[in-house]
Length: 273
Ligand SMILES: NC(=O)c1ccc[n+]([C@@H]2O[C@H](COP(=O)([O-])OP(=O)(O)OC[C@H]3O[C@@H](n4cnc5c(N)ncnc54)[C@H](OP(=O)(O)O)[C@@H]3O)[C@@H](O)[C@H]2O)c1
Image 1 (tube, rainbow, N blue to C red):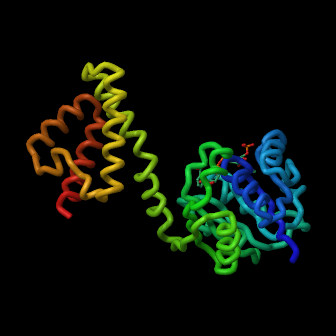
Image 2 (image 1 turned 90 degrees about the vertical axis):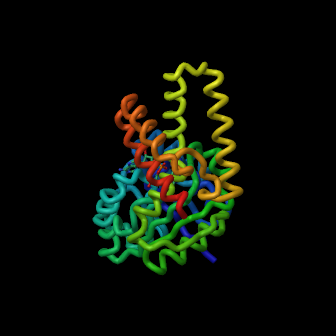
Image 3 (image 1 turned 45 degrees about the vertical axis):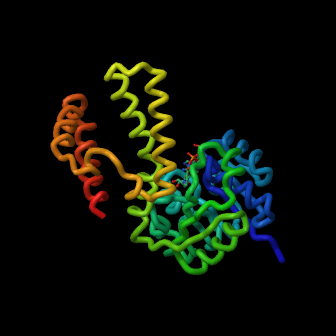
């Protein structure tokens, strides 16, 4: 059977990782790779080990599948440009990789007869070489036109992803879950370090406090679930202390005070479940 061709628009952390995995597994024939510059397109092709770097959409050939692995804010504009692309490009299948945005970002393509979808791999692609090693078992949220979703379920499963269906109208809240689960952790850790520093805790001790509490909390959450792992003044119902501590934090930093108050309310709610 003929191997399907794959064009990449965007060959950064996600694009080059997925391109390489699909090339190595023989799932797709990586064809043309367009990024923001000739240099980064060449780097992506080198990392993938296949494909041809191009510097303009007009230079891209027709392909069976198009991956738009550009930053979220670029997806709609790239889709609009592709929809009005050169005569050589025929409508096939296009998808983007955003967690927060749905396949509706690709509506200009959909209107032109393309099958469109979004495919969000729930992995931090901080470094493509590491992501290659970490990818097996990665959950992947799929949403979009049925034929596109079916094709992507096959190709993502082939490189070790665990696909699941997600409704388009839920993507923003779904992705907010990932923001709470992972992106806010460094923010909270940095806040704690600043509070300890400003309380006169020696740097070495503060680092040890951070490590001990983070490991302890992670272990307990994994073993007992969030409600079972919850401790602290709000969980104990010590409202007077929450109030006094909240005021002290607000005087220290107004935004941190708002976060303390909001998180204490959420902790009280969680403790009541
Ligand atoms: N990073 C993650 O952990 C992660 C996880 C899941 C999903 N995602 C999603 O994956 C998508 C890509 O994210 P990323 O982290 O891979 O971004 P990235 O590393 O910043 O790479 C973006 C790529 O898009 C290219 N690009 C930017 N504007 C372009 C345009 N107008 N035309 C053609 N190429 C363009 C960039 O080229 P230059 O380098 O030349 O600028 C680069 O190759 C986003 O939708 C993101 O939400 C990311």
